[in-house]
Length: 286
Image (cartoon, rainbow, N blue to C red; front, side):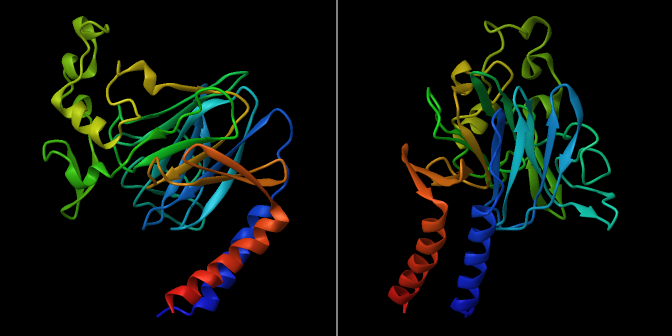
């Protein structure tokens, strides 16, 4: 059994790092990226007007803060099965964006993505139009407007149709979209199928929609999958679900939401409370 006091020390260290993060300046937006997966992932970030971008490593349970300037538009996704050397050169099994840790191009499908267009009104969505490689959830923290949670409730890799499956060593590592797998006008919503009257949901996109009900499942999916919000920070959770609590660091406070109820906790109190709560839970388990 793992030593609970070592776990407590690790938890306290993580909280101190988060709470001591620099204050986000006016005119910028904080994205808290959380790896809730059981595997290491390598998030990729690119601007919509320039596919060169950022990339980094997130081990299971780790989180980091990415700050985007006002007016930023771009995409965030997770890369899996990556192998980079000390110089940041390598490749990934899914979601690759060049041969570097920092992205030099867009993510390669199949890959789940979170898309953002920031301004006075922020637009965001989760998309599996280009296929699925990880569950992604996007939650808006302390915003006004719709601000609902976008993304997935499960892992499509566990139930991917065999004709869409991408495998590595007989393990499904991603699920192609029907467009990516068959490249037909009907599935890709092009040609005579390039309008809302003819670009319709298929049996494949319905499978995607069941797992990710608040995400775009095909090119002209339900427009309500695009969500708007103002004055919010965002939490992007890999391998999360829409009903999970999410926290973000904003204006010198840790802000969390649960079931659409928001609570701001001063950072000094946050550091004190969570280790004590953790010790109390350990005492109950013993």
